[in-house]
Length: 307
Image (tube, rainbow, N blue to C red; front, side, top):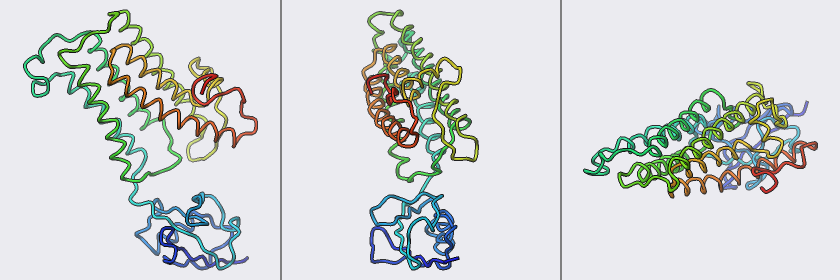
């Protein structure tokens, strides 16, 4: 069996050699090579390493075998240091915990935020809005801990501040105006409020149903991937039309929240979320079509027949 001697270079400073790993077998995986690098260079933990064939090339997958990389016996790989990492699960818990606690602060109308008028009676739309927001982020915390499985274990630590700023900032922005003593109830009164509430509840149930179905597609401890199809739950019938109905339901939930509260900040949050989720959905849709030759052609990414 041939053995490799692999010299690892810095992907940013390509003239700087980091380390040489000797006696690497063809059957060893990229992950095993990362472990050997981490043993000799503790500053480069496994989660910080992105190994590449070229300095600006694609990162190699952990399960790729060294023998399949077409390297010479004295080969070279390039390592990009991804920086300090943090677990995705921790990031999601922090992202969603912020709005879960921030939104009710404004609902309680402390005088240091709103002043003397903070005692004005609370409208039905305002009361329902705090219930909906708390339920939404409580559901997300529950899903993060009990339902979601994360294919990538970590993300750059610096992204934590960006992600938390987005969710925490928008939550405060929305809550400040909806809970303001000068807030005006929706134009069509309780009819508009309760139609929006019904849409929100149904969309949240649809979103949860899709997350459960996606979890069940991948057995614990595996990287198995399957084409998602409806599982008998009527909310999952949306998989017949779009690749990412969980994103569709998410947008519908916040659209319904916007209708229920007739709130411009909520509309801005819904729009920003729609743009980002549309990008994610299109990326996942393309990945499904590349991976599965029999992927249903009539499906679109996120909005039936349109997007």
